[in-house]
Image (cartoon, rainbow, N blue to C red):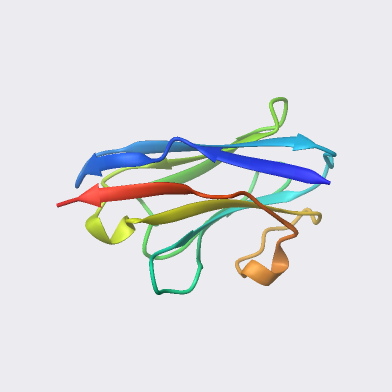
Length: 124
């Protein structure tokens, strides 16, 4: 069993930046992909970014491409999401997820473990 804990959320003005962290604990796997999703009130959870097991491939939703950067530290079992040029529409609860497959996924059904989420609020 794997536990994921997100941190780094908060309130930021439009145009600002935040860095989210996702720390994994418990049983770990040497080959797994990580992803970030977000969910605004009344909306479906949506894909934001993903990174494969080696960190060599990354994928982004069109809405965040060029502004967000996903990365991972294999030694620390931690994934990161650097968010720049934040917009009001980025306001949501951000969730970290992991899957026991080496390749990335863009659907919530493709992930096996989920964190509890961290709130990101962007004021205009």
